[in-house]
Length: 197
Image (tube, rainbow, N blue to C red):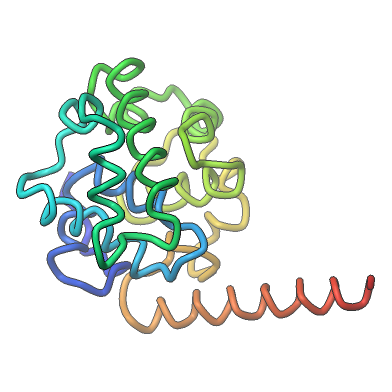
């Protein structure tokens, strides 16, 4: 299966890395929390630059956690919460080594159906229910990973051209649509909170 032309990071080398390397894609998704999308998905590329090597799940898992935290915290920091995210990435790599024989893609290539895929993703460090459903939609929409029942677990995120999440970002225009949706959702939540106080 050919790698998609990703545009989430809006950085050619970073997007190419996320498209071809399953571990990079997973790390980008882990980092997609309380920072702009582009910053999160630039993270895996930044990590390769700081380590001076391609991403290697076994090497990252075996790396001293404090050393990885140091890499994430070097200025400029790789995330708004670099230490916490470094620990999460370290935990992710250890889980992949122990549960998936060091093959990040096995998380989805060996899932029997959409429900199992979602359950597996949800069990990863840093993936709650919503992020797991978004990741299932991303795999389906941009990588053609569509096990039976994926639509049911992806929910609205799996709807074509919904522009609700990273699953729909294929260029700058779609990024702007997703950003507009997120801003609208945030404003609605803020208004609802204000109405309750």
